[in-house]
Length: 307
View 1: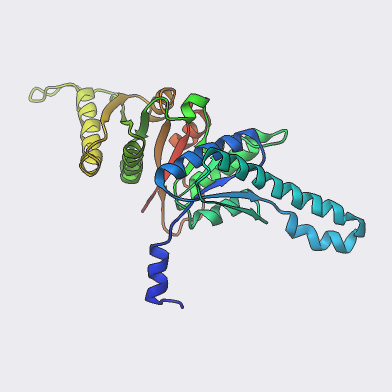
View 2: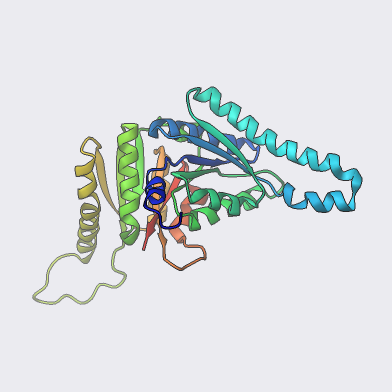
């Protein structure tokens, strides 16, 4: 079947689900709620995934400790109960939604990266379980955001920010990562019937050169004008594609990460882009991405821009 035209066509026309990772914690159930609503908006199925390593140790446990059978079963039952609880919650929220579940015998990052290859987006909560939960699930979310081939949404913030109560999406326009992020934000605005605010940061020159007798004008004004020009270039095509979406353009002096975090308090979704360089296997997430994933007051969508 390799290279068969029919097989390639089937892949291209495949309906990709929203995938949500769950671990039994309350934040992961908030991620389920968000993913359900998003799947309904897009008219796509939802897949609920729990990563578990229990199968890797089953054979060794049975061979070395015959009395450990019940422990292995208990671990498996626990994993199944995590996805069952999440699926029940999802079905209560959207009875007509197509839902599938899976327990994957991998670590969370490997499991969700594998799922991301055939997903519309991967959704996670902001924290997990255990005494160092912020560090552990934080590393999962960061690894996914830095490496996944599809958008990754980290569901965080207050309840009103996780819903569409604010009627606003904020997108950071960051040069080379702008096209995919802007397209995602404007299309989400069209689906949700909400406004989009596109933000481009600029900085005042640190050292102003001595004035030339033939040159006039404020260098800071030139930087702001350039930021507005970048916004216009990034948005013009998308506003024509989705003409019903109201898009505000904000050229903000200062740090991009601080500007985006500040605006997240009044947003339902914060969208940023991330580089995906071919042949580069390591994390690909910059300072802005790290900052907003840790400090945003609303869910964050990290949208990959392929090189």
